Length: 78
Image 1 (cartoon, helix red, strand yellow):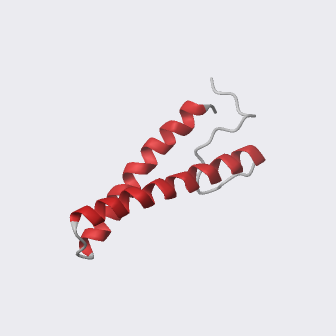
Image 2 (cartoon, rainbow, N blue to C red):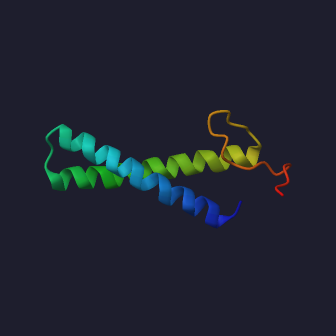
């Protein structure tokens, strides 16, 4: 799993979290500007923590039963 795999993962995670946080902030009746700033900032932080923890777990060989999305190095795909 190289850089491209993790970049794609981050590019999938960030927009999902961004939209979720933006909607929540708008429901809380925040202004659009502050809602976008809040969502952009915390989406970046959340994505970094998510990718960092998944990298750590994959390097340590820790399996995640819920996140069975990282191919193991032992399995050979045909």
